[in-house]
Length: 420
Image 1: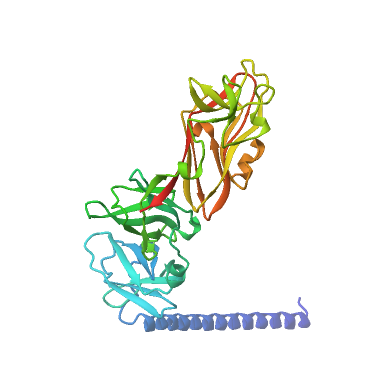
Image 2: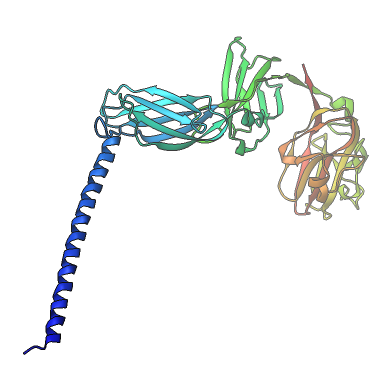
């Protein structure tokens, strides 16, 4: 039998449990009411934004490509299968500038190619939207593009020319200087008049170092300008201003007798009375005199005709070592050609013709560094240009072994370019 105190405790516990259940029921009911109210409020808020119907987003433009240009860019893109699109807008310059493009779709996929004008020079950001007839717009498409303008143009210069002339053979030739490829240079445009009085336009690739102007009208002018593409996507060609260039015609004037003595057939100064000797009017150093105890060398009577000669072997035991034969003359400014005729030689050793400033010809070892110009005797000629009147030494520098090596020259000539 329970005690009275235990009965009172059980009764208290039952009252507490009943109170907690009632409290939980009240909280649950309150939460349900709040949830229903919140749901209704969200629904009402959504209705504020979609009053009149659900939001409609037109299909955005696709496959956008922006190419650089001259104060403009070119935009290429695709309109996909959304028939609601009626307008496209391009924004740039922080949305201060824009371009509207009406859209009339004809196919499931239509293409767009359009120039965006008046774009300030430099890298620009573009934002592109499409719109339907109700003014709803697509999500944005963002792209960057480059515009070139006055700053880039100011950095461009015309390609240089090192020589432009019509030769005595009637061929008109231009020799070009090189250019920095980083500027975007790719060609030079040349215009000239031919012998039929027709204007001819040619485009010379930047890789070409010289150009022949076919059928050029003698002693007339041509004009030229240089072409640039600043990057591989650029749709506009930038051009320098045309520059006029007069192209003179020259003929070769034989000035041998004016400046050279004993040019051939050659006369002797000293002679052994049979075959060998030294040349009259030419300076021959000790190295050129390797015959008959170093008394003779440089001259040979060959088949009754005097020739300029270097020879060692066949009984001549002394080689030609640094043999120099030359004349010292004073020439006015101009372009010259020193030419050899009647060359008969074999191979071996060092065999040069040279022109050098001053009263002596450089030694064989110094020919390549101390000459105004030099060439191998086998070339048969030496072309050189003097920018002012100059005293020069011109002639032969030879070293050959005593193994039957030889060089014979029948005559020499000196020619000057005279412009008409």
